[in-house]
Amino acid sequence: MTTGTTPHHDIAIVGGGLGGLTLARVLHVHGIDAAVYEREADRHTRTQGGMLDIHEDSGQAALREAGLYDRFRTLIHPGGEALRVVDPQGTVRLEEADEGDGTRPEVDRGQLRDLLLDSLPEDTVRWGGKVTGARPLDGGRHEVTLADGTAFTTDLLVGGDGAWSRIRPLVSPATPAYTGISFVETDLLDAGTRHPDSAALIGGGFFFCLGDEKGILAHSESDGSLHVYTALKTAPDWIDTIDFTGAGTDLAKKAVLAHFEGWHPGLRALIADADGALVPRRIHALPVGHRWDRVPGVTLLGDAAHLMSPFAGEGANLAMLDGAELGRALAAHPGDTEAALTVYEQALFPRGEAAAAESADSLDRMFGDDALRRLLDMFAAHRQDGA
Image (cartoon, rainbow, N blue to C red; front, side):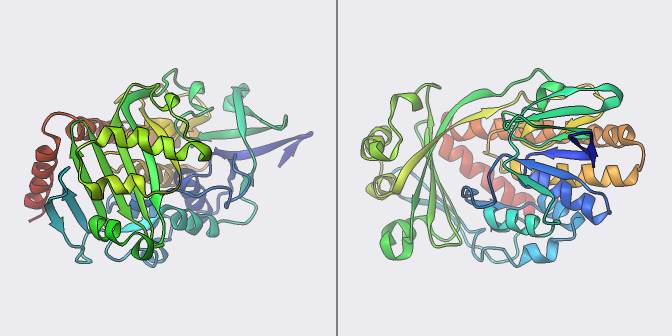
């Protein structure tokens, strides 16, 4: 729909991540159109990250609401729920096999995003639609400006645009804060052939090694690679002191390895033998319990609403659940968007607060004193609860 020369949408979703796409899909299932504006040029612009464990009560529930659960099951990575925990000397302290009966199956994030994209009408996503700002108009409508100088208006604006959301300032002054942890991500490609010792060390699923306020976390990926997250407790400007460009890769490896003196050679090899450039990432979070007063015609989902550290595995799952719950609320309140948003946010806020608190506690556990013992105790308690 177009008003004059400015396009108008009944519902506009900013951000084509898992949360925004889940919302668009659930709306589509209910016969409601929405436009998704995504800054990437197309779905192939960049890789979408590693494996995700999709939780039964959140991500899987969202996929059921979206009518995609059966197709999701075909994407599950066999063996991906296996777990191995080792100490810095390389000694295995915990080993759990994937028996195929777990409630958090692993899937490739890119394949999951493709599943959602392929379930939508082809013109749903406006690729290259980088949002630079938004302002309120009358009657709860908003005008959104794009990097190419164009704009659109919408009756309902949904910010699903991540940590540094351009939509969040419409409802909240909150900004993400550095958690004290930085990641350096590496990949070992074709690991079974090119890096067999590393593949044997990591195993078939998720891998933890913690000690001295740092850690190495890794996944065995569905394409045969290993994706490794080196986690360090550092000052926020530490990343800026290192050249992480391709030309500086060897020096970057040395800088990261300097933090792991005395660790087992097999653990150090996960960094030293990495293929390609190292990718640094500061871990930020919004305040636990972030919420806002009801603002007509606009809301948030996913990281835009409740950015948290990744140490409870809740971010992507909550984003999808947010999208599904918002879509269901809108479908249940035709013609009364404000009622739908009220229902959605009343559930969103406590759900996000609980997950953010769990993530913050997990960060403290994993990078504090006696982290390995505390991690093992946590897994033991989970096994006992599930028994």
